[in-house]
Figure 1 (cartoon, chains in turn red, brown):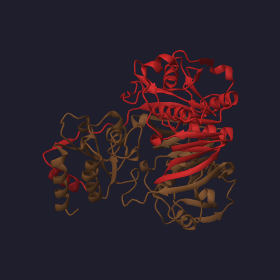
Figure 2: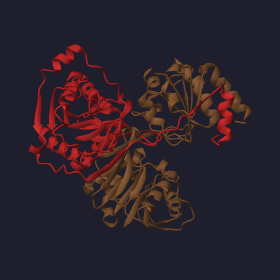
Figure 3: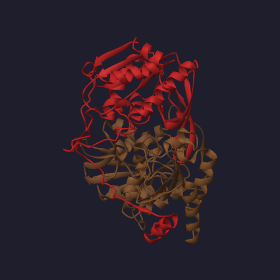
Length: 248
Length: 314
């Protein structure tokens, strides 16, 4: 069983993002970048499925700038077998990413796509569902447990107020939620090994996919700042303040 | 311009997020219809028809719709969109699961978690877990939008729209429902709660977390949350996590106990109306966002807080 895992390079989740003074976007210059946390969970799951014997090959793919090769090397160090970079400096919207992924799926013919539910930059939580719709494959979004078997996958997924279990016929698109697993740290020997694993680079333009943006970003602004609060002397002061202001 | 609003419900009751999404829809158009897709959801359809400003309720029934299977819901909606210019869905887990499918099928962008409607094609939405607000203008003929309901006021009741029963659509295809467990907690849902009490790594153990945080939450009628540090240390379950990679909450009152306030935690709670923080480190970053800060060991401060709440009749 072949697993395709799309991964995205984003600002490291521990970095405080800064909006550019001209309000054209978020400042990415000299900022630490890393693999999107939900993508890490997806890679981890794919590798675990291979270690369990349920999957035979894990292919990581990223769509982004040349530096996204680092993100793919991380996936390889975690245990992916090979990687593909669709190189572009354009900032693509989820619909465009889903179309590019659909083209890669057509070439690679995986049995299952496992991907993060959301990237922590755009926060769209849309690409996996869009890919599923474009391919006409079933989807299991927000997975917290996954059992792959021949021809189907049993997925426990996070829903409003609880958990739901569904069975999807393969091929399918599965998106990873936080509780699916805890990603490993790549060991030094595996990081060294990853440097020798195959990583193909293709130009986005070679795929012939319509990636024109549908949304024009007019402005990126900082949210209203919280006014500085007060320190109080004791717990009773908290309660009296909340009561006075009608909070409780 | 006609707008379709997807009703948030559990087949038995209509959720408040629907009223709030109707408000967002009314900012776009006066012609707002509500879709109730479910199983045995007749009362929900009646409740939706009672929202002021709603023109018509479309009501579809099937097992797959009642189970909230994304393929069934998107399969129902896509053909309906021939008669609408926009689809507005509350950004719940269910809404997030099917709305992007509708967008992809219509070959349009999804405009995600809208917090403000500027005009018919311009919207404000949070990115980077709310650390920045993006204003986007859509060039698509039809708009597929998810709405962060907490940012809109609920539309009033008092309407009397007609209810039209429609066909249930194509079903869920190759996805089969197996079962589900809805947590029957006496506490409110974390993302919808008016008050949230969260604990951090300072708790030191799962037992201590429950001993300290749970009674305080119950006294306030609050949901329980946790920092990522507390979750990673195993003191609280993963679905308690508030933060950039967990749940984003915006309650009326957020009480942070023994939480230092890492960036990724602040991203998940800084839109709360009032933030109370108790931490023994006076330099902890949580105090930079807290409206009321108490520099104290939670071991003494939380019992005092419980006493003070009791004295105040809580």
